[in-house]
Image 1 (spheres, rainbow, N blue to C red):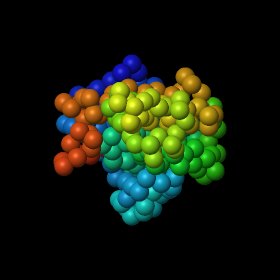
Image 2 (image 1 turned 180 degrees about the vertical axis):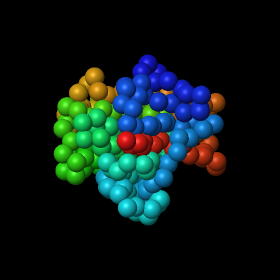
Image 3 (image 1 turned 90 degrees about the vertical axis):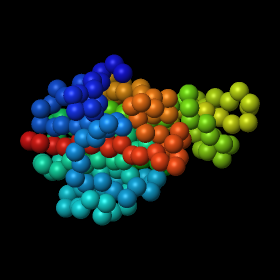
Image 4 (image 1 turned 135 degrees about the vertical axis):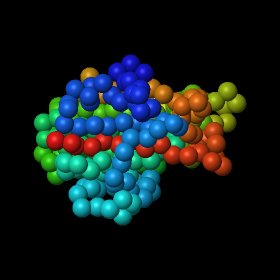
Length: 220
């Protein structure tokens, strides 16, 4: 968890983001969530939406972007990958929900393009933080899911009937291939399925998984 700190409020923050006083952000845990004003009805898509003027859960999609001051945008997860993006030059921000379907549809790529189109973000400026999600150690998938991903992100299970998918690595690759600098990508590295004391997990608790909020807000 190098590069991240758990605050007194119980949420994790990326130290590189905290260098910019005009924003605040956090990745939630079982015990606490950061504040959020606008989320989407998440549908595992490649849809990125500008949050300006939106009410909470007004639209369907899986990523929000904004440069508006004062309203926190966020996503809900319980194994899927939460990703926050920050543009320190344009002061634009984004929150992304990337499950396997959204990852296969390249929601990260679509969101970065939306930041570029709507706010003029430059790839060399963007910072990305990947939060708690199910990791390769615990994410076993069937052949229909495995077929959607490069073998670089897959390993066969011991029984050779299923595969383990590294969803965080697939999203990191999309961030890098989009043009974000490697030293601008930060990963909490925490596994929601392994760390039952800290995080909710749909795989571990399908009957009552709970949800965690990951959010970011421009405050100046």
